[in-house]
Image 1 (cartoon, helix red, strand yellow):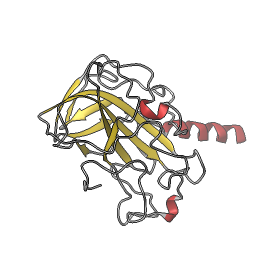
Image 2: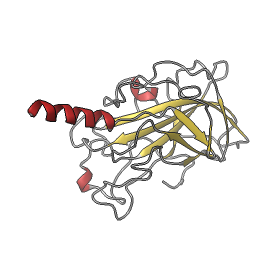
Image 3: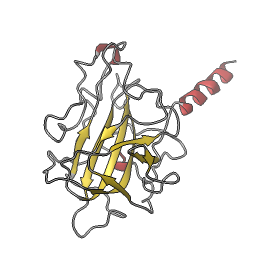
Length: 235
């Protein structure tokens, strides 16, 4: 009986994990099948998350580059299709990194202080001890909007959903993430800032990563990472 219970627990743990293999732009799929615009992640089979924020895996958790590039208008609404239900509590955050001149979006690795954050979240008001979040228990990531001020060009778009159900211990938080290759069109003349490196933007004891969910709310939770761009953007 003990062996059976262990197997059931292991099965449940695997089922609770997920990947984000497909980008959706303004309600329409940006890729016809998994991992064509989005770079395949190392957990494509295991579905396990990244727990070490100092690891290079925290950037894109990348196993391979993608063969295609999606065109995304500035101001577009985006989300990702999830491989399984996103049932762990925690925020979804989005970052962009502009591909340097002379590099290709098909191969550039996103290293250095090049990433800016444009979307983050807090628990929903009225939830029970930080346990309820936007898009939780759906088969997709939360929606976000590409800032209208974003300059035109090639970018890596990064999604992360931080599962906080075990985050009361160091390295207990689980990061489920992916990076897509996109070209932003119809953009503005903004100057995204601050720019951060991944790894580098997070520490394992940041209050939004090392956290007891029962002690946070929509007013007290502090999302990890840099401030949002544009400044004053709503969460």
